[in-house]
Length: 616
Image (cartoon, rainbow, N blue to C red):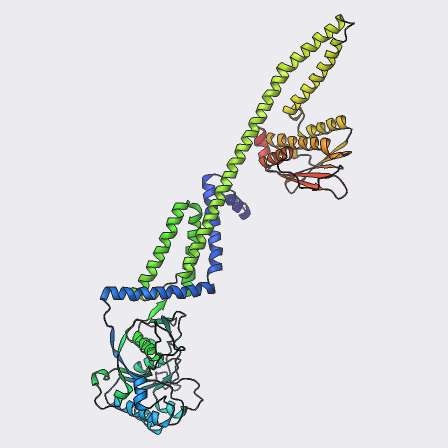
């Protein structure tokens, strides 16, 4: 047995306009998921959220530091891998050196390096600006020792004799540790690569420029790319280190020139020479006070040596997660009530913040939180709107059904009253009329019976009109279109207005239910009454057509037209027309014609299968 083919458009319409409790649930889920998807696409990648993410990272970092202090009573975290030789305010004053750009200053630096290297350090790092005068003594040091890394500030083509330094120094690097806007976490510019010689496909110790001082140190320690020696660095994606107030053993440059330097502070350690002068405003702010760059590089190098680098979630994976979060939460928010929806939002935010903090402290993984929080909030608002809107539509449908039930009961009551008047009151009036005829014959000289007969004839005719208005029998006996024509005949007879009826929808009546016929008849009846009372028209035309699966009923007159002021919504007749049209799903529109007159346009959607069921 073959399954019937269902067009996609019809399937979507069945979902969107599904009826009942389950149909409403499907609609809410569908609209919620779609709205969550679109809102997530708008929010992801917003520069404002990226700025907010920076503040969230700062808050996460501060909480991690507090938790570290609470758990360990703030111990002194001292590393034995790195020692600092500080060129500070005291050394500047005692040695009479402002910077290392002249010959005497570089000679002093050469003596300090020579003295430190005699104590067998693992590596010497010069985090100093060496541009300026040439120094044979410093170049001689570089020729003797090949475990020196130089940080060059500025352009290599400046006053520094770059060829001599690059020939003898082991490596060099720039100071370009990229900082987050909060200053708490900085990127490690590790560039993984393997160096091969041109002659053989083998690794080779070659002096190569690297993009950062940190990578220069790390490459020199392992004699190749960092990815080959440190198994934890496998992904070329962003790596970060967080400044956690590490303490480094340090001596001043003045102490480094002495012969009695503590060997335990130098041997098998990385010794970094750097400036720690009085902080200036342009210095990078890591904590509440300005932090010299020597501490930045020491922290970065220590992070790599101790395998404490902080990773970030892949941007593609983060987008997929945020998209899933937005779609699922907005869909759930559209079907849950206010209390459950609010509890779900609070729980989701709490889980997100707690998991991001735990991953940052224990797994050293940065999980984005600003964008998910924005998506959750937006999904909550949109889900609430969809829920309220769908509830409003349900209430409107219930109200429409109640109004329809009231109209049906009103019509039934009208029919009962019309039948009572026809079966009881009208026969009694007719009997009285016959008695009056008998009195007229007996009392020929008295004019009262004749006057009573005239009044009774008028009352009987008026009673028949009222009965017909209460329940138009012509609608049941002759049909919808003849009933409309009968209204026009009555209008022409009572007012001498020329009337015409044009039927261009010959088979439409077969698909109209009894309710549709009755309400359309009442609408046309109300429009004709308005024309007779207010329009001062000479001609009225009713055209019945069908286009685009809609029944279009046009009532046109050549009267004085619509009033200059807007139509009053509180008018009983107009309100009655609107309510009747709304009850059967029709649309009513009043138009002012260009010359004179008014057109009332009624459009009723036709459902080809409802007429048969409705007429039964």
